[in-house]
Amino acid sequence: MLVLRGRPKIPLADILNDDDLGLLAEVKPKEYQATENQVVIEQFAEINDFFRRHQRRPSENSKDFAEELLALRLNNVCCNLKWREMLKLYDEFGLLDEEENAAAKIMGWDDIFADDDLGLLDAGNTEIFRLAHVGGHTGKPYADEENAERQPCADFWRFEALFQQTHADLKSGRAYLERLKTEQNLQKGGLFLLGGQLCYIAEVMEAEVRQSHRAQFRLRLIYENATESNILMRSLARAVYKDPNGRKVMTDRPPENDGLFSDGQSHPVTGWLYVAALVAAKPELAAYRHLHKIGFTATTVEARLADSANDIAFLESEVRPVLAFECRNINPQTLESLLHAFFYGQRLNLTLISKNGQSYRPHEWFDVPLASIEEAAGYIVAGTINRYRVNQTTGQIVVK
Image (cartoon, one colour):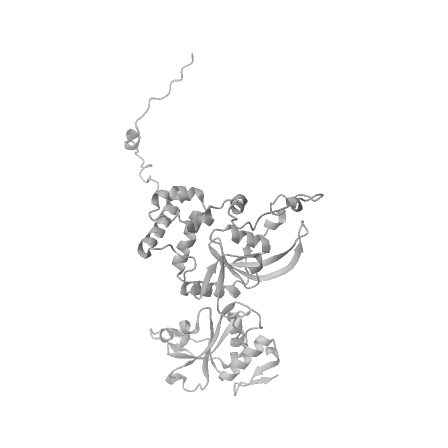
C-alpha cells in the first residue's frame, strides 16, 4: 500500500507568530453585512413601532409619505409567503393574520373563484372558451416585447424639474400614490413609481402590429436617473402590476398654462427665467437707469434670490424679482443665453470689487428696459428674433 507522507501540521498560532515580513498584520476580519432577511426584519420592526405609537396599521391612503411607504412594505411582506413565515416570531400585533390581508393570500384563479359568494363568476357553458383551429399562445411575452433597452436621456434637462417637483408634492401631500387599475391609465404625461424610482411617459408613439396581430403602443419613458427606454405600453403595465410597490402618481392639481412658454399641451416644468433689479442702486452704478439681471433657475426664483447680498452674481446687493416666466418645453438656460447674446451691447461693462477685496466683472447685468427683455423673450420663443435688433442708444427693439 502506498502511503503519502506530508509535512507535519503547524499550529495556526505558530504561523501568525512567525510572520517576520508582516504580511498578515493588515488582515482584518470581514465586516458584518446585513442579509436580505435581516433587512426585512428591521423594516418590519419599523411597522411594529408605527402600530405601537398609533394603535393602527399604516395606511396606503395616508398623506404622510413615510406612513404610505410603511403600508407598502407591509403589503409586500403579506404577499410573500417566505417572509410571512419568517416574520411570525416578530409579529407583535397580529399584523400578518388580520382579515385585511386576505387579498394577499389569494394565490391563483382557484382562490378567486372559490371566494365568489354571489356566483358572479359562474361559467355556465364553458364550451365557448374552447378554441379550435387556433394556434395556442404560451402566455409568455413575445420575444421583442422585452427588448426595450435603457439609454441615457439626452434632453433630461426638460424633465429634471418635474421629478424634483413630484417628490416635493408627494412629501407635502399635494400628490399621492395609488395602484394602477387599468392599462388605460397609461397615458402621455403619466408618472409612476416603478422599481423604487419615478418614471414619466413623455410620448406615446404610433401603434405597432405585434406577432400576435395585437396593436400595441410604444412609449418614450423617462426615468429619474436620467435614462429612458422605448418600452411597450403593455410591458410597462405588466411591470407596474408585478412590482409590489408599483404605483401611479395622482394629483388633484389642474393643468397649468403659462401662455408665453406653453403650447397648450401638458409639458413638464423645465425651470424659470427671471429678471431682477437692485433694491437700492450702488453709487458706482447710478448712471445705469435700466439695470437688470437676466438669469435662470431650476428651483424657484425666491430660492435663487434668497442670498443675493452675499452673491457676486447679484452684485452682493439686495434684489427684487421684476419678471419671471415658468418655462415648459424649452431649455431655460438656452433661453437665457440667447437673451444675453441679443442684448450683448447693453451688458454692464465694468470691474467691481467684492466684499472680500477680489475684483470681478458681472456678466448677467444689462442696461435695458424691462419691456424690451419681455418682448425679446417672446420673439425667441416664436422663432422670429432674427428679424429684430436692439437700438444701442435707447435699448428699444426695432425691426432690422
